[in-house]
Length: 66
Image 1 (cartoon, helix red, strand yellow):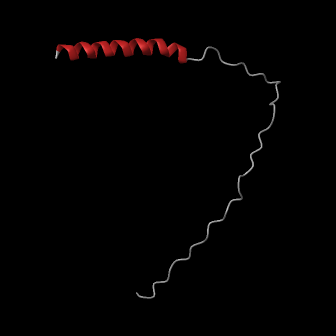
Image 2: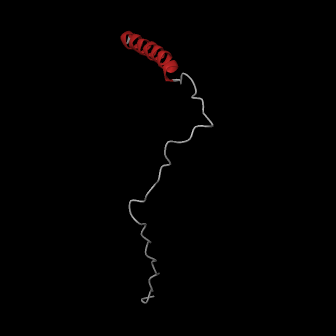
Image 3: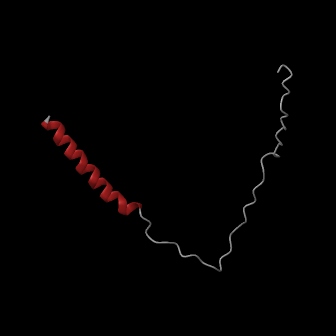
C-alpha cells in the first residue's frame, strides 16, 4: 500500500517536471514579421478532381394500397 503511494507521488513529480520543461519549448520563440511589400510566390489554383454530379431528385412514392 505504501509502495503504491510512493509510486503515485513519484509519477506526479515526474509529470510535473516534464510539463514544466516541455511548456517553454512548445511556445514560439518570436512572431514572424509580415512584410507588406512582399508578394506571394504563386497563387494556388484549385482544380476539381472530377465534375460535381447532380444528385437525382427523388419523387415521393404513391401509396396505391392505402
